[in-house]
Image 1 (cartoon, rainbow, N blue to C red):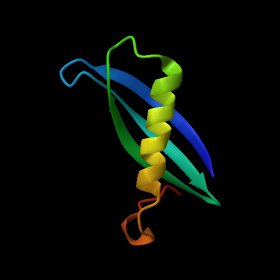
Image 2 (cartoon, rainbow, N blue to C red):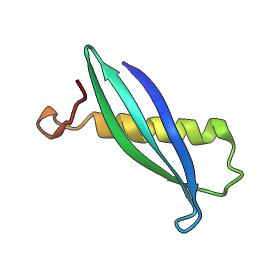
Image 3 (tube, rainbow, N blue to C red):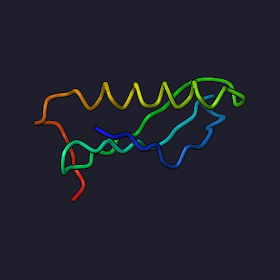
Image 4 (tube, rainbow, N blue to C red):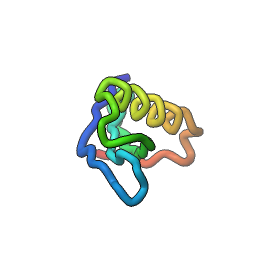
Amino acid sequence: MSVEIKDIWYNPANSAFEGRIDIQRGDQSFRYPCAVEGPIDMPHAELRRQMESQAKRMSDTPPSVFSYLQ
């Protein structure tokens, strides 16, 4: 499994970073929208860790609710 974080932005209305995380499992890619609450000066390493963790938790859901990219 590989994880790629893309398009992170800060949403001041929600005081949260938002982004899209792609997870590659075998020959399929799954895309997850993630949001992490925190200050705009949150350390980048912590932000990445929380976003990856959130996407991996979503990725562990049953296959019947997956969406995938071809």
